[in-house]
Length: 180
Image (cartoon, rainbow, N blue to C red; front, side):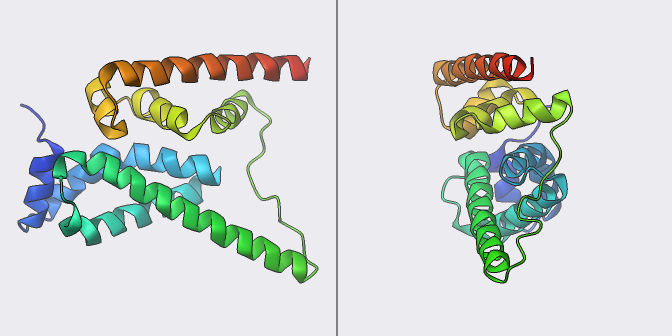
């Protein structure tokens, strides 16, 4: 049994089959949460932002011109919501500082174990490389789906992944040297 394409699922949702959006959610939720986690460095906030991105996508689904690019469109919505979140956090931080309460300005998870260090190193990568890593490795998308989501050719995807792996390797080696 083959899985329906994004286009078929989008058309089903627009035709009144609401459960088809659940299939789109299941397909893209890990990727959207990963994109949001890159911004928040906090799982709860990332999950909230991902939910908001999916809600916006559902509300605006009728405006999507090409249903074949649903994944890329959804990631763009998530990125936009993350930018809004960053601006809101910045305004809140500025208000706290002006009010003389700088406490909790540096909210965030502790980076004392290897997984947290790796996550932190991934956040240092350029956005395109982070998205490629999340899409292909962390979400486990096929190369065809990953390249489609990123809007790249197959060779373009592999070049971005190669650069990301090389840069991540250098960052990890540099991080080890800093610890020693």
